[in-house]
Length: 135
Image (cartoon, rainbow, N blue to C red):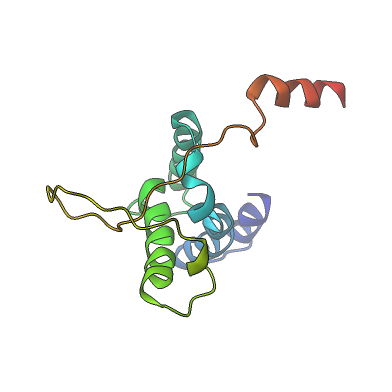
């Protein structure tokens, strides 16, 4: 944020400022989103939404920039499609087995069994706060 403020104060045009913000802040925010997006809580998604809205309000992003959910979907879909459609993709072996459905109510983006959510590997909020206080 400080670097963006410095770029703006040195006269970087608005269009280029939006591009720099998208290539730095938004790219780092969405870099690994395909792997962790499904495990986020509503409050975490809300915090990211507020952050992006604050970037829009301050002029670092255009007012018509996509929402966080849209950006996460845009990052997730091409990766997942590449793994599904390419039989030689190295990540393909990590896909769960295909699910067989007897119903055809609506089309799904994929036919794989979703993994069980595992909270064991994530720090709880109270444990995280305790670790910070002990430092």
